[in-house]
Structure formats: C-alpha cells, structure tokens
Length: 308
Image 1 (cartoon, one colour):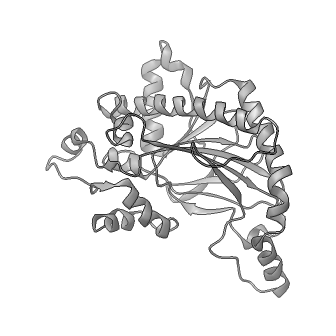
Image 2 (cartoon, rainbow, N blue to C red; image 1 turned 135 degrees about the vertical axis):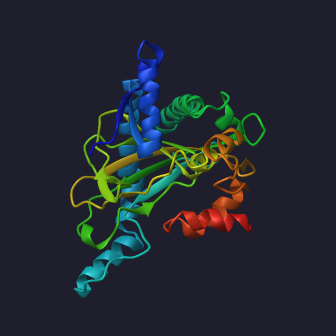
Image 3 (cartoon, helix red, strand yellow; image 1 turned 180 degrees about the horizontal axis):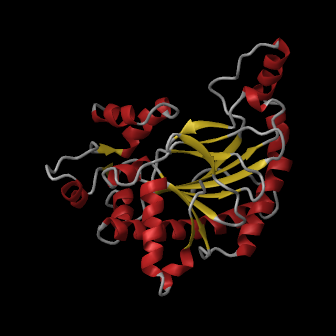
C-alpha cells in the first residue's frame, strides 16, 4: 500500500472535482496523504532544509549526544538484557510558535522559518476549506471553530525534530505510536530518510519520502468536528541505524479556549437519531487529558474529557 499523493494545483482547473474526491478519500480512508504542487516555493523549502540541518548540527547535536537518553541506551546495552527503553523517544525536538524563543545562532534560521510558517498556515487554511466543502459545511466552519469565536485565536505551532542515527534501534522507539491531539498537521519530512509509518487496516506501512511534498494528516479535533467521518490515525517513527531524519511538523490547532463539538449538520446527516458520536468539550481540557494519555488509545480520552 502507498500513501495517496495528490496534486493540489489541480483544484484550480478542470480536474477540480476529481481532486476534491481524492482529498476526501485521503481524509476518510487514510487520515494521511501527500500534497505536491502545493504552492510553496522549492527555493523556500530548500532553505528550510538547510537551516534546520545547520541548526541541529551547530546548536542541538552535542546536547543530544550528551543527553540522559543516549547514556541510558548505552547502559541498557551494556547490561546485555532483552529489555528496551520505555516511555522515551529517540528524538531531538523543539517548538516554534509566535510567542516563544527560537534558536538564534544559525544564520537565516529565524527569517526562513518565519516565512515558511506563514506559507504553511495559508496552506493549512486552504486544506481546511477543502474539508469544509467535502463535508458539506459552510466555508470557514473549521477555522471558525478553531478560533473559538475570535478572529485569530487558533494555535499554529511548528515542531522541528531530528531522529539521529541510533546504534541500537531495536531497543528504543524513534517516536512512539500515537494520534495527534490537534486539528490539521502539515509535515515537511526528510527527502531521503524514511521511518514514518501509519497504521492502516492493522498493518504498519511507510509514508514514502517524496521530495518537497507536504504530508497532511488529520488530528483528533478533526475527527470530532466531522463526527467521526474523518479519523485521526495512529502513526510512529522508527529509530534507524543510518541517517539523521529531519521532520518539520506544523500543527493548526484550536485555541485552548475553543469549544469543539461535531458540526450540527453532520450529526443530522450521519445519524438519523441525531446523536453525537463525540462529546462537546473545551480544547484546553482535552489537552490536559492528552498530556497524560498521548500514547494510549484515543477513545478513552474522548470519554475522560466528558467529565472534566
């Protein structure tokens, strides 16, 4: 099986209906798909690769190699037991948002990533509008829900991750299996180093590296807003012996104060008894539950947030 690859530029031509159907299929049947010809310039994407790799090399690598995680793996191997490292990920990661401190030593990093984030946010909003249309919702429904009634309250964050070569990948996960808590995720993954897998029909399959594509996946909040029509999907990253995998994942999430619930139109359309398949909750409350249960089954999270 191969993750769907969709030419996003075809939305503007005679193949619009076909492309809309492809995106609907990507959301309904996969929860993951790759966009090509998405409107973000190759020149900008190449700059993002360069500055992220340089940032890791000059500002992050030494700290990772001297980390407790690396030392714990060495100690475990020396014990020569069959144990694995639990509750940790072989990952170096930091967050970029509008109001936190960014790495400052890498030339061009701040300027490039600010430009990239602005472009990704626009692409995310276009993808959400396509979802609105495919779900039969009023244009802008998802964005308004995420903004919680305000103009620009939604959270847009970018995680810059590296998964360095691991000498014993059988002993530790790159990133443990989970679904994403938020809304729409836009991933710019490594061109060459694989490792990202999704769970499809009970089988782990690779999300194939595709140069300068943007991988889209749907988070838990899209599952709720769509009343289960679009599902968030389990995914993981394998630790690998060779290659330093780069991953730049941007999250278009609701405001922490936003109230999330199935769209009323979908409650009526999807269930003749007009029952919601998901509770109504405040996103910040959901994130409190998620922080404790990220790597556990998602269904109990929806139940737990009912009682918050």
